[in-house]
Length: 277
Image (tube, rainbow, N blue to C red; front, side, top):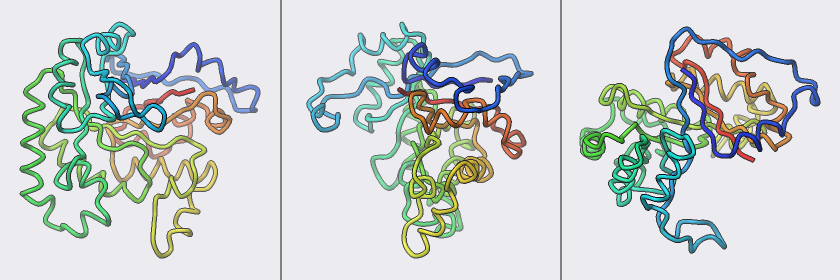
């Protein structure tokens, strides 16, 4: 199973980084014993009005059949929610159904949500030794059951670019989601190589500088990836790959299949690459 997440035209990105120019070894792409379709997922589905940043804040409403149809026309078979929240999710699922694509929802508009668990200020498992409180679980399940009733529901976008400090909380939500919604995607996208140590570690408070410093350089980035796999046990590994960035170019796209002694042990079948320019 090869998941590839594209956010830019490959013809612009693929030629931007030539491994021989940076001295990286020529690597052989992996092969897979299972015969499953390759999926192409569009990062960020067309958003609702006025969610852009700065000068783009006044964007029009792009949640239309025409805009969602473009996703399918471009060859993508699924899309990931970034800006849509509770109010927009039913409409996004309906538009995705009309367009013939799967849709990964976000659930992060309240404390009693997947996002509330992932973003919990502290160690969720330590503070809740009996598991996710019933009130939280019932609240989340009511929403997920309603989403699941729509055929376009493909799973959940649980977190984007988390620091390692959040991995334990991500794992708590992952185990609950997988138990209650087997067969659906629990998607987490990681930071790219070249991100700052404070981003990769994500620790705050006393001793945070020392903890975050452990994520310096290549060894630090491999530590970040391996910790995610060991703790979260993901369905697959996904991280940003900005092909026009010198930092990302120094991290070959197939590197994770060569240097991941722990990754192949887990349920992670392969990895996604979130392309950008």
